[in-house]
Length: 607
Image 1 (cartoon, rainbow, N blue to C red):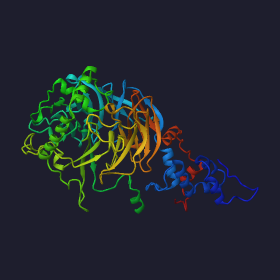
Image 2: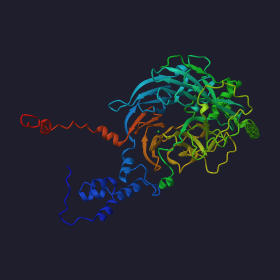
Image 3: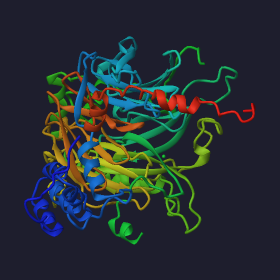
Image 4: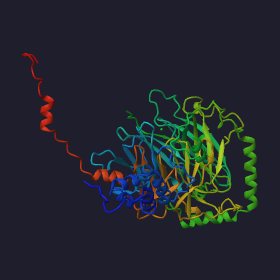
């Protein structure tokens, strides 16, 4: 036991002088000095002291207030210092190629991983000893997949959506989505998904969203977003299993990619309030799998010739390192074909496409995203990357999904298409002014975090097939989905080096207090969402493609890398608790036990 030091050789220093000394010491020295005597212990707990240590140590502008949920400056300092998942506790090596994506179940008891080895693996996080073990692995090569690239659990953790690249004829850019039952790991259905980097996502427990792409011209295309049942009802053949959600025109070689669903609640109780000024003022199937082939819908042929398939590969603009590769001669042919096209022809096609859009696109409803005061309601948004100037995804498209669109029941395919207005308008577009390489939602779906590599300031795009050069620094933007505007400055620390036409997706994740992202500089990064500061760098031996926080415990983080490993990170606090031996039960005192069980003395022979 630490004994208090008695300073009998002279009078004690005034508290004010001790405080001035402590203000010039590192935080760990202050904690050690506080053990010297009662006076120093009291001063070492001073709130003004820890406020100053907090701002100086973390280099946070003093205009940023303390987190509204924090109880003291000392506890806030300790939270950022001790509760960040930055200690590597385990390395999982069961994958045999680059690991591309990680996804936790909503309960946090399982997570899935996708890899270039064309498997999706499931892992258990609830072992008594705290280690993580693999519980299942499925290979998708039997379905002619090149690799698995993305997965997502449905809301009740009974189904797993797995997205991958489909190796069709001529190395097409098509993908496929598989739905796997987590009860017995059987494959329930397969859904065509084009282009493959739409990824797909769940709308609710039983319905998922996929994409399809139809080329109208050399630079103009049409993206169709479909709602699919995860499995077909076996009771009736007349029940719809697929329904068109939206049909959107693309210009200048852009396409819709990376779809995700945000459920924005009318009762605004966000995990975090990013507006500092506002803070100052004031969460058994057993049938055969089905293949939903949507390629011939709308009487548009899905049998592209060899030239069109090669053109699509060029237009996708994502990593050729993560794609089936074209032959050099084929790639040169596409590039030469593009360069040989006259700019006048491109301009003419763009003008024609815009004219067709004006005459055949439903007029946007200005009230679909806004609500009258006191009349707010829950809203479901479909978010995706898109563009209008070049094939690089540089815009966030937002389309509201109405309640009657959330099921495949209703008119059969084609009945609602008699109108000449056959394109759907976007409800809102946010331009990021750079190549978007990642998106993630906060747990409350209030904020959208976007990884992008910026274009040069003031650049002008004259050729859609020659986008501006992109920065090596990755900016992490924060968009408030309630106000539909970007909040504060972007986060920055991570870097990427691949050029525009090889740039690939880097998945990020958001917890209650933190946001994390991978990077091409062989590190993962963790920021605090409230203070906007980088707190940790997580080292790998190659590119970090994906990170994932446990929804059950944000002090557990996973990172996946091109080095074929998954690393498990826990906070210093959790590591310390795991290493502390359990205290044995306190032995009962014999005297106290006898005292509690001693009978009351009898009086006149009666108890």
